[in-house]
Length: 168
Image 1 (cartoon, rainbow, N blue to C red):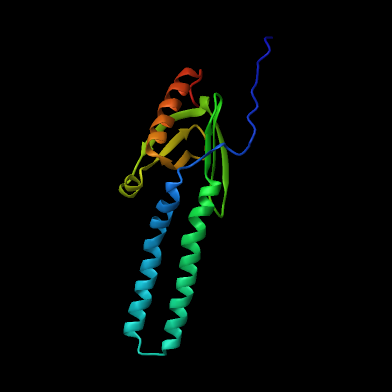
Image 2 (image 1 turned 120 degrees about the vertical axis):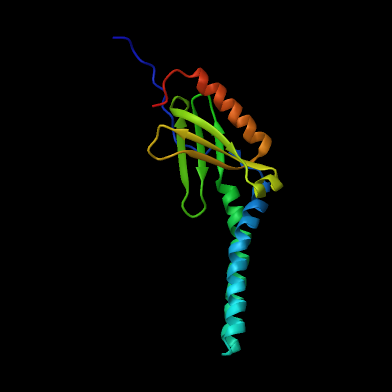
């Protein structure tokens, strides 16, 4: 029987960070939720003729939580979100509270999609979705520079085409 050479892929931190512009993008994306809450509090104040101290407490708590979220979350996500493409696999790390590390062998990749919404376009960002034959679902690279996202798609398409197998 012929010996098969096996490659062991090991979970490790990927080398590449997302674009630093993702920090501003994630901040802008989080802002509308807080603005809706502030609008609800303003409406509550206008409708309620009650005690002003409860309204002041509500505004202060909302302001502190919103400021903390808008300052901490995007920077934390930037430190965590990473990606890397090697000759054998794609490595991703994402999240901020729940962090996920994934490895997808190139032979398991089925499709590579690039997308960019209108807000991402303003920041010059794009996302790459890598669909695999995994029950865990696709790998997603969020917050990439749009040129980097295009290059990632091109590289993955070329490398997966060169890898034998049927991606199942």
